[in-house]
Length: 426
Ligand SMILES: [Zn+2]
Image (cartoon, rainbow, N blue to C red; front, side, top):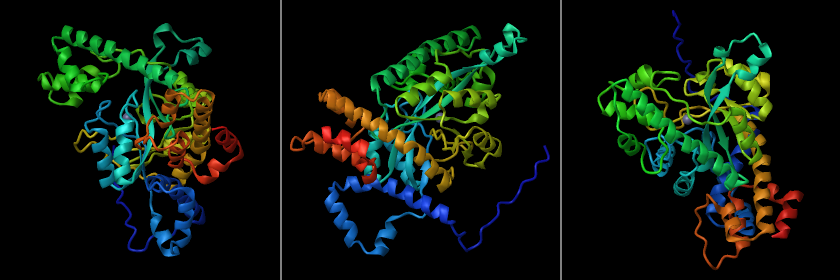
């Protein structure tokens, strides 16, 4: 294509000075990131204040990192990744990541383990999930009414959801939503195997299930690995290129919800909805337009090779957050971006938190209100769902709740009148 390989500009020696806006953003991001560490020390508010007072200015500054590495897209063995949640967190720590979103496909089952590991490494985990959906162009074409039936197309779309430390509000409803998608994956994998069988490339069901691991809903990658191990293809790429690509001879549709439905579900349960890897879509514009109407907050724009201008412009056009992460699976190989390799500028991280934090705060308040209405053990579990702190019998429920909230909410957020009104009822 005659593409010119531009040499990377070396920023020799001198650091680029940050603008005032960047400095403020960095301060605000750092404050939020450090909340978890404060609360891990299990100090109460008073002690925290005293501690800060006696901390010399120099040391206080030293606590603040100059750069905060976010990785907002990663996978573990709880879906199709190769590392356990704790191994993933350890790797993130080695790579200098300070904020990691675990976003397994259609499950949040790895979050508690990731949080526990994160406590050891001083990393902040954003509980996340990557939801498999389909986008149908039917509606668009009905409007054009010239479209023939066969030109109606469906395309897989992945939507990332980011939650607070308490997870989704209306948890049961959200959990059922994900369960339905996972159940559909078993049916879909079986359909793919029967197609492969007809193509004289037999793969055993037990084999696919063993690769997926216990309790993990099988996906295309697991089928591809089984094809490879059975000697039908030379590598995973060939498995996709020959059989498993969208619409390929062994491809099968799952029972995924409409992308708009997933976005609405995320919004309704106090999450941030972000369109994953728009560069994988045939035509991202109608997808973005329709999902924005459903409540989409952002799209991935940053990759390890930099910011993609096309999607950045798209984000600007629709008023969406510009985000990104490595989509690390731990597969290895040169093609994979390593954890923490995506540079999310501090302004983008701050914009994300500015939108997300009030939404998370509200979701936490809703979960608290539910507990106040019915202080059952189950409702307490909704607050501490992803928590790792041991609940000792000497702690009152209020103490437990307080210690959970402190790892996620700032003092200002907790002292906000609306939030205080809820806390007073506890
Ligand atoms: Zn992903």
